Length: 356
Image (cartoon, rainbow, N blue to C red; front, top):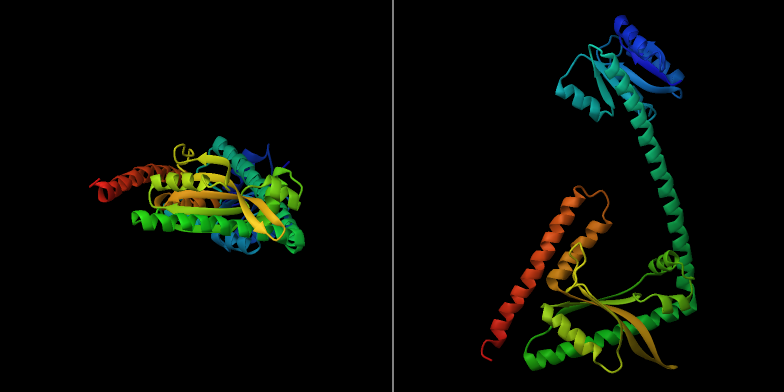
C-alpha cells in the first residue's frame, strides 16, 4: 500500500484526511513544516504523495517546498496544497514552485480521493516518460558516437576519398555546363535565367547514417550504386518557366543522362514544398578514362528557396511552440508564393516581349 504524508497544524484536518484516505493509503501526519521535513527525510523513498498546508507555525508550507527543492525531493512525489485560500497569486506561486494540485478546505471526501489518486498516477506517468526519454536520448547519443567513429574511418579510407573527389568533379562539370547556358542567355536575350548556384557534398556522417537506415552495406560500392544525392546542386532561377527551360536544355546535352525526375512545382508536397528535382548521370574525365557519376540538381525560384529554407529550420529546430499553426501558415505562404511567381513572370513578359 502506498504511503502519503499529511502536513497540517490543525489536528482536526489531519484526522479528517486520515479517515478519508486510510482505506487506500498508509497515512503519516505532521503538525508543522519542521516535523514534515524530518519525516520526509526518513521516508522519502516510501512516500507517494505529500498533502501540505501553507499556513503553519515553526515552518510554513512555502518553507517546506523550498527545502524540498533544495534536496531535490520535488522530483520524487507529487505535492498537493491543502488550503482554504483561493487567491490566484498564491496558486500561481505554488504551481511555479512545482506543486501538482490543490485541495481546498472544507474537504469533500470524493474530491480528496480523486485528486490524490490522479496526482499520484500522473506524476508516476510523467516520471516514467522522462525516464524513457532519457534512456532513448542516451541510446541515440551512443548511436551518434558510433556513426561518428564509423564516418571517421570512412573519411580516412583511400577509396572513399577517391570517390568524394569524383563527386566533387561531377559538381564542377554540372556547374560549368549551367554557367555556359547562363552566359549564352545573357548574350542572346540580355538576361540571366538563374540567379545563383549552390553546391554541396554529403558528409561522411550523413552518408553512413543513410546507408545504415536503408540497410545497405557501408562500402564505396554501396555509396556509388545506392545513393543518388551524395553530390547535389541547387539552381535558383528568376521565374518558373526559366526552371523548365534550363532543365530541358541541360538534359538535351548528349553526354547527360536523366535518371529520375520529380516535379514538385506542378505537384507540390502536401506541406506546400515546391521544387524540380533531377537525378542525373554526369560524365567526368579521369586519367583512367570517362566515368559517370550521379548528381542531384534542384531547381527553385528565389521565393521557393526562401520558403524551403524557413521550412527546413522548422523541421530541425527543437521546442518550437504552436508548430501546427506555423505549418498552416507556411502552407498559406507557399500558395501565395506560387501566385506571386507567376504574376512576376507575367510582368517580365510584358517588359521583354511587349513589342513582339
